[in-house]
Length: 232
Image 1 (tube, rainbow, N blue to C red):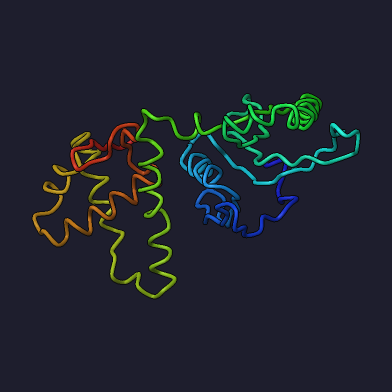
Image 2: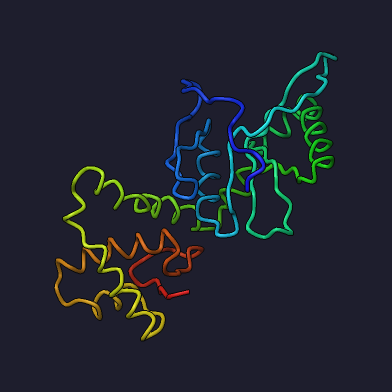
C-alpha cells in the first residue's frame, strides 16, 4: 500500500508555466503537474513496470529558511516500487541550471528532506532534464507517442463508439506472437490479415498493446514499422 494517498497541495493553472493534468492509467485517476518536465516524468512513471504507485505533492516538510523563519517544503513526487527491498522515494524535479543557480536557497529544503527521509526509511532524489530527457534516447519520444493509445478504448466506449473497434483482434496478435515468436510490426500485420483496412485497425491495437505492456518492444530505439514486437 502507498504510504501517502492524497496530495497536500493543489496545483492551479498558471500562465507562467505549463501546468495541467494527466489521466493516469496506472493510478486510475487524474494526476496534476506544474511543468512540462514534471509531465514527462509522470510518463516515465506510468510506463515503468517497476513503479507500483506514485503521488504528486505528497507531503509538507517543515524547515528553517535562510532568513531563520519557519517554512514548509513540498517535494514534487512520492514513488513506491514493486520491489519491497527498494526504498520508497521522495523526488524533486528541477532543471539542472535551476539547481545550480539557486543552490543556497534550495539547500535548507533539501537538507530537511534528507533528514525526513532518513528518519522514515525513505530515499530523497533530485531529478533533472538530464535524467528525464537524455539527448541520445528515443525512449521518452516513444512514450509520448504511445500515451495517446493507452486510454483510447475506454474513451471510445465512454463516448458510445466502442462498437466500432473490436478489441478481440488483440488475441489474434498475441496468439500469433506466442506461436511464431518475435516479428517486425510490418510483417506481423501481413501475417495476421491480408485486408488493408483491417491492417490499419490492427496497427491501432498493436500500439495499444505495447502501451500497456501486453506485448514487448524496444522502446529505446526509434519506433517504426520495422520494430520487432514479442510476447513477454
